[in-house]
Image (cartoon, rainbow, N blue to C red; front, side, top):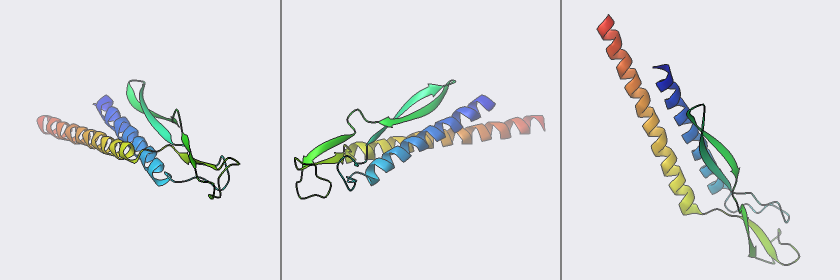
Length: 125
């Protein structure tokens, strides 16, 4: 019973971490910083397994920034290029919906564990 409980809680934590990364990417989608090279680096939440339970590793995306020509921007470099976070809003909203579904699935698992415990107590009461 404890392993099911631990698995559900680990799944909820992993979903929460994924949601936090997507939210941070959305919130910082236009964060160029004040000077060249200060732009927010878009991140990925990569789910893996640790001791048989889901676990999320947060890392920079393979290409965390993109350069856009904007010579009048305060963060433009000598060539007029501004570094922007490489954030795809559609992808991030999809990631948020997936994290929400995973969180809800694990919450339902907790409810099922609770119902099973209630039934077990009734049998032995």
